[in-house]
Structures are given as C-alpha cells and as structure tokens.
Length: 151
Image 1 (cartoon, one colour):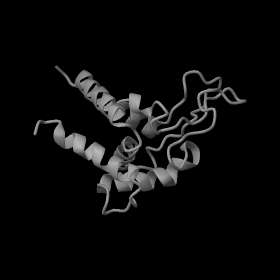
Image 2 (spheres, helix red, strand yellow; image 1 turned 90 degrees about the vertical axis):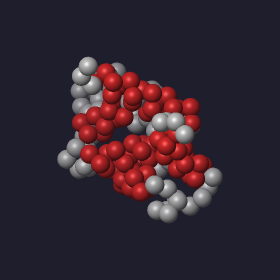
Image 3 (cartoon, one colour; image 1 turned 60 degrees about the horizontal axis):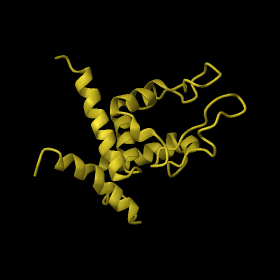
Image 4 (cartoon, one colour; image 1 turned 90 degrees about the horizontal axis):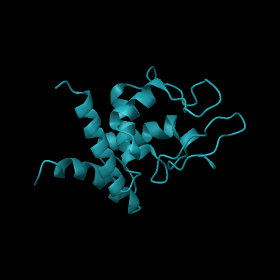
C-alpha cells in the first residue's frame, strides 16, 4: 500500500456508500463526514441546496448583479479549490470578484463554526464529487500546502 492509499480510501468510501443509496447514518460513513453533512444541512443547504446542487442559473448574475450560490456537487467548481482556500472561504466569507456589490454574498462562519467543524463540512463536500475531481482537489491541496510551507 502506498502513502496515498489510505487518504484515498477516506475520500472514496463515503462517496461509494452515498452513491449506492445506502442510508447515511453514523455507522456507514466516517464520523467527520457525518458531522460535516449535519453542519452542511444546518448552515449551507438553504443557499447551496440540500444535495449541493446550488441555485438555478448559479453561473449568471442575479438582478442585483451578484453571483448566486454555486453547487458544491460535481457540477460546480468547489472541487477546484484547495482545502486551505475552502477553509478561508467558509471562515471569512466570500464575495465573488464579478459581483457588482461590495457585500459578502457568502457570510463568514468563523464565529459560528469551529475550525474542526469547517474541516468536517469540507470532508462532506468531497463525497459529492467524482473520483477524478477528488484527486484533482487533493493535488491542489498538496500544492497549496507546499507553497505555504517555508523552504
């Protein structure tokens, strides 16, 4: 078993269970993913959809000139961001660079969620992506960590 096998199993196993239609309870998925799903449903689903499907026409500005909440499933672009970027977006909030308003269109959750809860949400989001997307995102996260580490 190489050094990537165990992390890959942690990413793929929950997705296989969820994709297979099995009930998602604390016995069928890792605790961190189950916690992340619960937090997602409580704080994120109202805007990003219960299944991570986002808003209709999420890639077109709304009447205010703001980009609507994107999907977090495989149809969106969340998987293109590193873990550190996703943590920052969730903790500090986000304003899409193309918005015509200055307000954060995604609120900051740093005063509501702990760092561990934010990481759990991200681990849950990874179960909504394809295997190729998870691999891409893992590479992005490793590249980001290497860029942030002192030489």
